[in-house]
Image 1 (cartoon, rainbow, N blue to C red):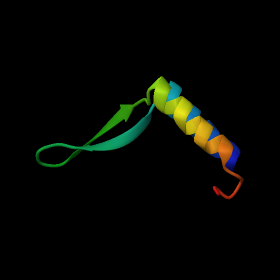
Image 2 (image 1 turned 120 degrees about the vertical axis):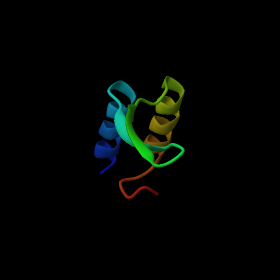
Image 3 (image 1 turned 180 degrees about the horizontal axis):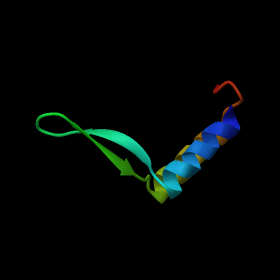
Length: 54
């Protein structure tokens, strides 16, 4: 499970993922990437966890 989380994190960083963004009347679906800082921070968090996320 941890390996899958790291693959998704890397995809979010390099290619982006679709997210919902609220506008004045509804939501838009946009593809966004995370920053280098966010990627490295979350990677260090994931690597400190065990396979159960603890």
